[in-house]
Amino acid sequence: MWLCFAIDKEKTPSTMMLPSSLRTTSSAQFDKAIALIETLSKHFVVEKLRNQKLLKQLSQTQSEEKEVENKLIKNELMTSILRLMESEESFTRVAEEILSFSGKYIECTNTALVQMSVDGLSADMIIEWTNGDNKISPEFQNIPIKELPFMNGKPYTISSDASLPEAFVEFFEKYSINSGIFLPLNVDDSAAMYLCFLSINEDRQWSVDEIRFTNDVKNVLHTILIKKITANSLAGSYSALESILQNSGYGVVVVDADKRQILYRNDTFEAMFENQIDKVAVEELIFGKEYNLSELNGYSANGSGKWFDLSTANIKWVDSREVKLITFYDTTDIRNYQKKAEKQAQRDSLTGLFNRQACEKDIAMEFHIAKKLDKEFAVLMFDIDDFTNMNEGLGFRIGDDLLEFVAHSINEISSIKGKCYRIGGDEFAVLVDHENIKNLDLIIKRIMNLFENPWALGDKEYNCTISMGGTQGTCGYFRCHSHFA
Image (cartoon, rainbow, N blue to C red; front, side):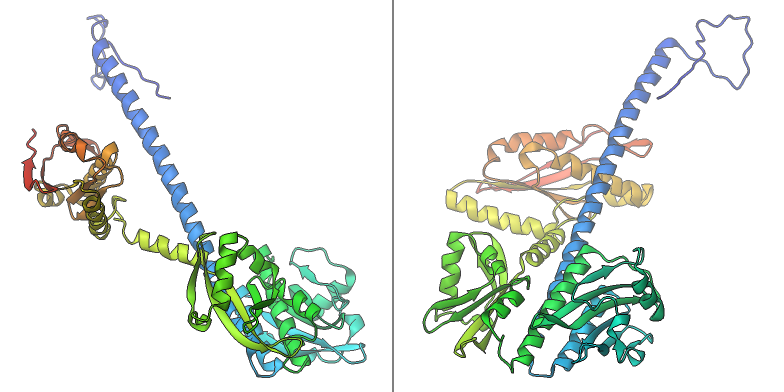
């Protein structure tokens, strides 16, 4: 709200002496000043709201990009971990690598495997990874089970701010643990081992994504453990295999290629290809002899519009026959992120318009379409006259403001919205496609009219002119030049 006062010189008595520092005005001049304040205030508020909206959109975009980036890192990490499932090395060696990968990813201080003794009375920390010198495995040997409150077959997720039972308080204090995740690895329906993610001497609140990730790691370790126990068989039974793979987070299918028979597929695979078109296509992909699945990445499911990468392995099935294990990784988010990055690379950072690269691409595409439809289109190009001297005389900030205003004003013309480009410096291009070519004269006139009035930059107004030329179909080249006071 503005509160404005003025001294009306027409109504002030001639005998009244006013201080020399006060100025007087008339009612007409005062009304004009109020009207100007109203106009400027409205523009100020509109611009403020616009800036807030842009900042909100920018924050949302950055948040989405960070989320996709984290997904990409997690997918790459899980791919590395899943590849260890086929490793011929010992369980201990493979588990050490997995604990190192996962500990670094979720940035905890320690990851460990605690194994119960054969008699079930004590436990040892058989593997430990740490990001510093705070190893606890040397003293975590032959510990009575009664001193380990988490080793009862149940999973536990405990953050630093949790209220703990007395048994956990004593255990945490003994090993300087502030928070932890404890997940059982069952063999024959009993917890033979526990996978532990610990935060020692550091407070930690576990997020939902971190808890999901640790469970994925547990499932992979459980798969490897069962495989080693059953002497390089994928699993000791079909039910064990099913319980392992159902929660892997990736599409898994086992096929007998010779008999064209699908022996197993998990729920994730079913959800990936629930569309009937995709179901038929992926079965043809799996059994078709013309496809080399080991080299096939970037498979597109046309029905759902998703993208997948594949990995394959020849394994022995539970009945000892040779079969093929195929894993499908959903890479749609990664590809969309890459497309978004490519799109941003075609944007001019100052004006927000598409740049020269995008302009050349769109012109080539429009030429192809217009030629096929036997239509015409036009390309207009213009630059701001004497812009270099303006930059040098008024400063680059004023020059940048002018470029932004010009770009925004021209891009808002309805017939060319989204078809205006900044191709360098003060040079712009406008693509008038075959659908709007009938409005070419009007578009040119509207662009020229923009420069009939001065541009408000900062607290001053500036006049400028442009030189414009272009091509239209086979009509040759024309040129026009704006001259305005």
